[in-house]
Length: 221
Ligand code: PEP
Image 1 (cartoon, rainbow, N blue to C red):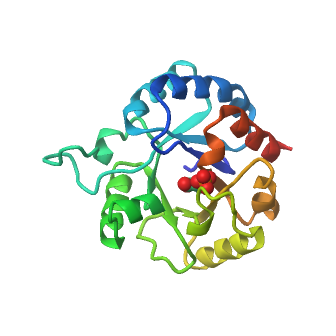
Image 2 (cartoon, protein in one colour; image 1 turned 90 degrees about the vertical axis):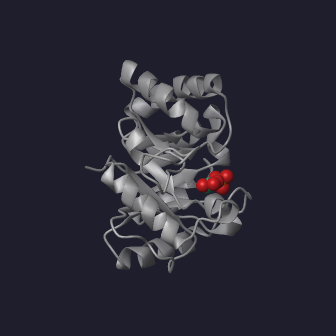
């Protein structure tokens, strides 16, 4: 069962200490509680466990995503985190973020293994692509369309283009499609209007809890 839409996914990347993640959760939790969609946060791997415990202890309406998952299952893979090791902690995982593809040499074959492992562990992959023609591995239900020029640049895609990309991706399967790339409180409505896109992935504008709260507020109006 997928969570309520829209999905608003905060990707912290390699930012924040645990204290900062905890205080971010504390600030955003009350708004997330009444938000009709779903707030998903993607902190660095070491904080997934503590974040999960905090969410459970306080019955918060926030879901967790890991920023990546190993292509290996549990075993001799030093430094890796296998999907089955975090299956009770994270509901989602990002797979194929452009920073992973570019900086860690992740190709279609590796990404397909990651998707398989996530699905076997009942973790929902959010599969990141840069265009409407990118291959999407079997079993993926959620795609994040993230054009390279828009990531971290303050230069978002044209909402009409993002929507037609979403439409194109949806012709290949029954996917939910998120948009990612310089989303802010000012532009989020234009991406989610008319319901063609099912959510957003937010990097830079998610780091400050106050700016993320404005994003949720903009969608709630
Ligand atoms: C991202 O890296 O997934 C992203 C969407 O970043 P930003 O919001 O900073 O463009």
